[in-house]
Image (cartoon, rainbow, N blue to C red):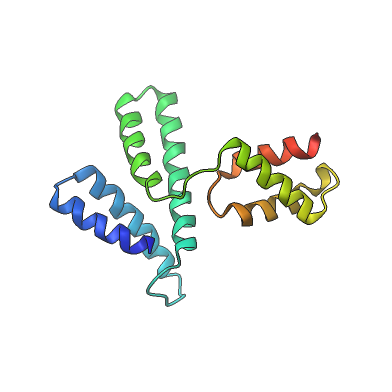
Length: 149
């Protein structure tokens, strides 16, 4: 389980006195605790929920990275990059462009997409098949490209 791996890695970071890694893992665990306290009463989260939360956190870090780059803050850029490396270490391997194109084609065929008006249906199916292995923006661009061809 991914959540258990986070707990073990947190302990290892404490033992190794790796303050940056420890801080990032604590932030991730905090995000997971928020989800648990949502009233679901669950003690363990399924990996799919953990991946979704970690993906959302990675997106926040990427946005912070872009803002730091735009503001010309090299120290914040480097910090965000290191934090992003830690977070991405827990996320599933991202799909290659060829795999993404194949997935989109399969999703379009599954829903019987006829053109750009079916983008919502294709996106829903493709997101379900991708299961956190592709960024939403990248998926959207691939679906648009496929449906306009």
